[in-house]
Length: 332
Image (cartoon, rainbow, N blue to C red):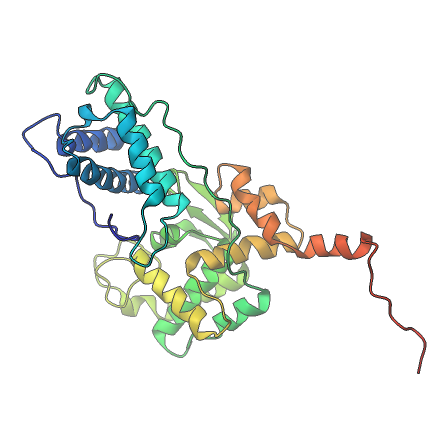
């Protein structure tokens, strides 16, 4: 099984001349997804999942999807359950869930297109996804310490401060800030438009005055020094502008600043997204407003932040729980 985090786009091996091979059918399936406007991320992950499964199938002399039965898929699900990485740890429930859901979607398509005789995955039940709280939670003081790590006397440090402030203020996803354009920013109204976010959905969200001030300073002092024509309007540029900051570059950038803050916490862009949501909830924001800002299609996804936001719960606990510490109020 490929290492976790491997994002190399690979089509399954097989006879390219055989329309029933893994290679040909997955290629046709991806074309179907493109025609029906599936997001690039969804196509990428399904492609990788199907590549991994095709390797497993071909090792068992199953070079064509038409040969796969329900029994084969159940055996593969057991394989995922017992598989151990080089460090001895099992693969995550999230990864296993993604694998099974990709197989279900692929075989459903193949069956509807009459590329296979029946759908062997129609009754395949995916593992339940784990509901885990974020490991690290940033406080307001933590965030300010992270911001202070940027050397704003240096052009790149100033750019990085603007990036961190934008992530913290808007709760943007990593992929959303990477593709953020200058014309999507409205200084007068204090809003940004997220173009084609997760699920290929646009949304308009607020951005705070402090973040706007840092972006404005970055635009005036730094961006033109990084720009190489033609200019496509991408807001945050790499040090050598051949393309926008990559997702990996953004992750490493944020990770390094969090590490240098010496908080005993680690993470990347998503940690600032968590901080945006959690701290706003603790300050009294309605969860439905948080849902709109983060771009969650399902409120249940946003509800995890109500579990992380403990301050209100502690206030209720302190006010109502009968077990209280008795304090001596008499003077010595």
